[in-house]
Length: 503
Image (cartoon, rainbow, N blue to C red; front, top):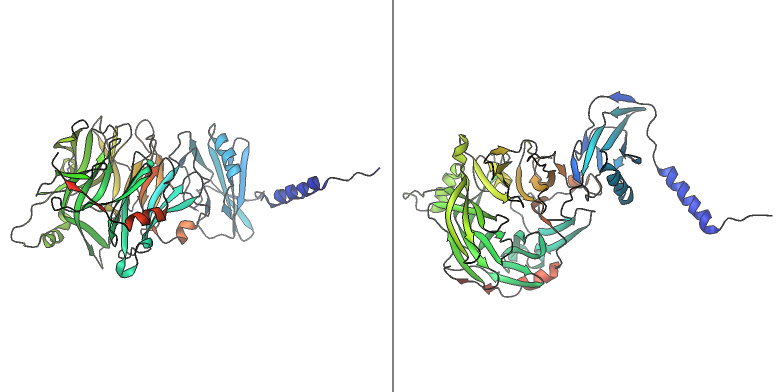
């Protein structure tokens, strides 16, 4: 009697044999080297959220080949040339890693000899991170902004989408610039961003309704610039700025951005009313940020008295740009009356006893405990300053410190907290000094951060081939539901004019 195997089983066997044959085997003979491997991105000793996409990496040194293994419990992933786990294996590995760390072994081949480097670990935290990240992508050319988009990326996989494309409403002579996307409490249905020049205006999206606002008014300095949504009220505080740029040929920082004037205003999304809330002649107020309780507004301010002998205010600022030092202040707010109290100091740079210093971009942790900010020698736009670092203040205990465990020898600038307060994301130029890319770090119960890790990509070499900067990383609970053409249609229409009132 003969037996014939069903075709489905026969073909299934071939497929299983093919997969088994393609799975690389680790070398059995090798030399030991008691140093960590040089890999890119650098994921040695990092802590990652349980819902992050697979970490991929490649050897960052000359070699004829590479083998790498992720191992946690009885789960093992082996890859050749580039470590690129698939999603199924990665999920199994992370589940096992909640009980014990992932151990990583890297082997490099030089000619016919293999070398095994010192193993390192990756810790998987049970603390998740908000699943979506949005950012502006811009070339690092300092003057070009046409090929500019606001994008969103799912952190649980590699899905990336365009929120808005700058060239949908203009090009070249009739060009447009978009910036400063911001959300109310990580809600992707409640967002805003600005368009400058062609079809200029502020786009407000709120629970499915989109509108364009013309925020220019004779009673305020300028249209709104840097935004801060109130945690639950339909209010947005903006700084209003007269901004200028200088470009250098020999200075390491290449560009300086500064304000000749800046104030704070508050805008009501429902009524389109706007009012000044801080507009001192001898102060430059910028970068508002709400505390999570909605009763305190933080912001930055630099004291600057214009020289009466200099008629041009901008020229006066340019001559003294390196003497501009911003400190952090706060104002109380009564949600019932919409009244702001007088300002009070939070962090004055002179209190450090250091020469100079400029504190910017305050962001309060969701539990109200910590104030995260960026510090550099001077100025208002740290994203161009190679000496910029992240600092943190404990609002309960009062101590202030640089985040040495997070900072690099290059720029650390824009940053934000995750909604659960367990993670931060920030922009850094640590890879090459030119391109800003998103990095993430975990905070423990004592206020200390883990080693930062770079945004994972399907191909670990992606960022080295992608010649754009990530600007203003903002975490979100989900993807923005509006499409690029939805925003373009709104921008091409007339803007709703604001009405100035005194609250």
